[in-house]
Image 1 (cartoon, chains in turn purple, brown):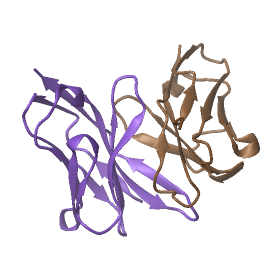
Image 2 (cartoon, rainbow over the protein chains, first blue to last red; image 1 turned 90 degrees about the vertical axis):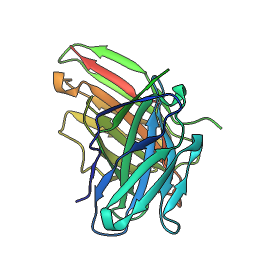
Image 3 (cartoon, rainbow over the protein chains, first blue to last red; image 1 turned 90 degrees about the horizontal axis):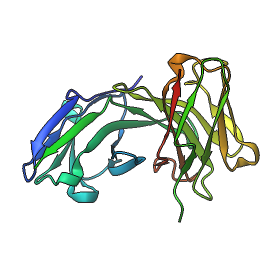
Length: 116
Length: 114
């Protein structure tokens, strides 16, 4: 069975600083990898995804993530954090269990606080 | 285009009562998923519909939970009777049948059982 580990429960950064959120996964085959963000009062919004091809993927809001098969990692990065990035971030791995069912396995989330 | 919509956004009920959560998927999305999360823990899969058919119920915790999707449009998740441990945020997601990996999530329903 697949699993996702987000080692950092809570991270605090200053506005303008760089950010890296860690994600490690366990999955037997080539994974489909996702990062979602949940801002207060909002739903889960997809930041970016990796299915195949270029291992460095670009997402919305200036985020990027790099798939490293050898390290089973899919870390999320942003070069300069904005106050509006304060939210909870979830890494997920998707697996097909037949047909069009791509159920997701999520990590516990990382809460990001941005200091002015 | 409207996104995935969930009702209510927050529900507070007493232990033993019944609550029904509703999810309206994006129009044309045949795949519909329910997930839930307790604060500080993972978001966990509950079940998957394709149109009105349940394809995967492996995440449903017990028989107090009943999910339906009559007519293949909106879905309901009923909890009867509710227990304190059911206090979680319940998420719904939908995707197109031929694009199952691209799921869109709703804002969630926060259920509090007191």
